[in-house]
Amino acid sequence: MIMATEERVLVKPPSEVAKQRPGEIEDASWLPVKVKVRNLNFHYGGHQALFDNSIDIPASRVTAIIGPSGCGKSTHIRVYNRIFEIYRSHKAKGTVEIDGENVLSPATDILKLRKKVGMIFQRPTPFPMSIFNNVAYGVKLHYRASRGEIADRVEDALKRGALWDEVKDKLGEPATALSGGQQQRLCIARAIAVEPELILMDEPCSAIDPVATSKIEDLIETLRDNYTVVLVTHNMQQAARVSDFTAFFYKGRIVEFGATKKIFTNPDSGQTEDYITGRFG
Image (cartoon, rainbow, N blue to C red; front, side, top):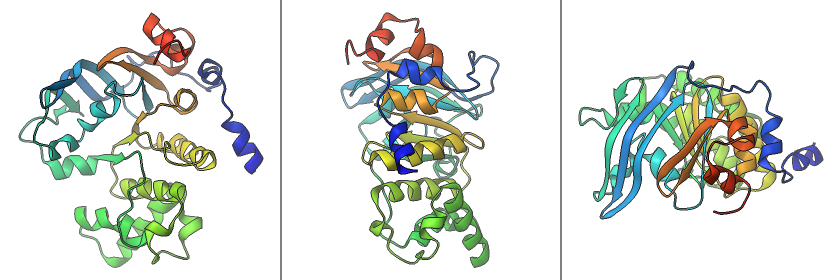
């Protein structure tokens, strides 16, 4: 099994990987839209990082965001749940509608927004508490649930996070004792325990090994059944393997967006083609 897993992550041209995706959707226009972004501009103090971003993220699909370092990929998705607001100098202008509601409106309930929009960061971020309490934390925050209900939710989330079998006998142990790949799956389980509708993943595999990366990718494949997933990744082979749609960012602008197979095999933009073929970036 390990040999097969390692074989899967051998580097292939993303165009070849994308061709192998089954049941590829060629057009997003007929799909329901989960996130509608219009004229999004973002400033870090006096520095502008995003320029007039407009995109429709299809519901119940995986959308990858690719582009060179510093092009605004992570900045863009961090607007969706307004996590940027922990820094006073960071400002977003424009509209980001999730299910038709502009989350940048002052009337937005931030607690409800962050329940609806879960986020997985580049490095695993387990809380300094037990495995069980990591997953139960959000459940206790958002729901009035009995101990039995909390335990059921924790078990269900760990199963959906593909981690239950590995931790079911050590739920009381510190989460920080888990391996890096296990910690990242724990963070995914913690996010889905509160039943979000949108999951943002900011380079979730950049700090873990290839075998753990394969497990995360398998998990992403299963998440699309119940969630809308937006994945920021530097790994174009990963984008080609797991996403339905891909957006290419460059210097804070969205250059091109479309079905993953088309982006990697027949892009409309010369900039996109240059990037995915390694001629720049």
